[in-house]
Image (cartoon, rainbow, N blue to C red; front, side, top):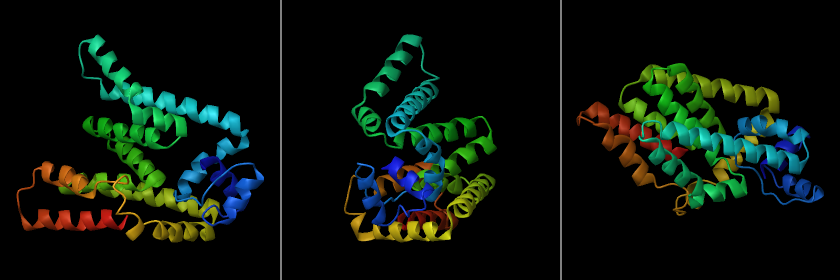
Length: 239
């Protein structure tokens, strides 16, 4: 789907409409209308200059590299080395991980970006952390819930910097792909959200996300804290 969507956008075909289904059939492929942000299609577009098989090989190799990099960063504090290598191997053999590699999804890319967010933030590299989070949001939207933690802990400069990054990325997608395609993405997002989204427990556990992000962040019970929780939670539900 990613290849078809990005190629369609490059060819002037709206990937958020049923016309992309007919376009995919012409290529001998199957695809549904896209539900990914325009920025992701823009990022994926260079692979459409390659053949389908070559593009898949490049995408697969990139996923392997990012998975290894994320695994190494996540296990950096584990000692001794043998135990660390054991955990890295478990990550590589984990069922959902192999499924992601097989289907060529974006979760490994998002995992890498989120690990960079956490590692860079711990070291005080706010620009790197904010840029990585903005990129993750522009690719799949739902990483925006991570901003709730930084809002609760009153890291307003980080929150504002990330939002500015999202705004700049959105403008880039708007300028490059045009307003018609961007508006079509909003319509497609609304069509695949709401009542069709929340009954599917495979999408996201709303209750668990809210609990882990906010209640484990150490609220002191003040009215301002709970206002942040409510506003951020409503924002997440809106996404």
